Image 1 (spheres, protein in one colour):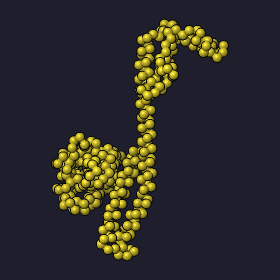
Image 2: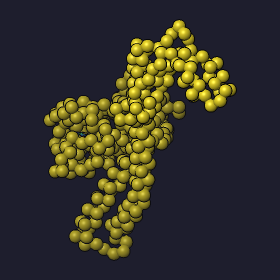
Image 3: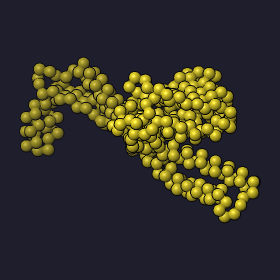
Length: 330
Ligand code: ADP
């Protein structure tokens, strides 16, 4: 049947068949003891291959297999083959994904070492330790640094994403001061915002003073959301507000920027997704920021949601479950 792929059925197994199948007398005795009366075999077939065969044997004179049984057996076999094929494809996809994550993790790790050297030496040059720089050199050095920092951020995003996908990201919970974290994070996007005359404000009056979470990961998420808000807003403002919503803490980053069309909104949390995929896109970026941020938010037990309208700005909200700080709030 593996050759022909055709089902087989024998309403009554002829004695001759058993005799032909047996190796010797003892073997024949054992086969007879099984009382094989009726038999059918159906192929486990997918559109591309024959995975195997299912054999049914009846050892009762009361039920001899007929065409009805064969149809049922064929139906069962095609469903089983479908399920097996799906499981095989799923396993192959999982293995490919693991290989991809391993490759990305190794590659980004290897890239980081020479890149840190580039950044380190450009720091030294900028500090003019080996001698003064003229204005032209300073300008070129600052471009070099911007490119190196961009590359480092990209590599860090890839590394973070592969760690998250491989389930290797670890949590470092601890109690920290929310106001400090918000202030330090906003400080990082302030220069870009000032350069575009955007007003950046924060409102944390309705938030607890101290929070128990992973401050590094929270800072990374907020920085991503804030830099996007500044990046995609040409005029107006960017506001970060933090408040309690039921049991969770909501961090809302609202901008007055270009906004996002409804059909794009869900896709943006997928890796490498960007609304403007053209070669002439004006904004830099890898399309990894939101995927990493969503992964980190889930690791913290929360999630990021988005409300946006093209032309009317966007509001990304991170919801975090709040674990009551186990040290007294001061
Ligand atoms: P990147 O910013 O590196 O492109 P992200 O994953 O952070 O990657 O964002 C993906 C895409 O989502 C961006 O390229 C942009 O098209 C869109 N986007 C994100 N934040 C905003 C925002 N605040 N306003 C408008 N579009 C946004």
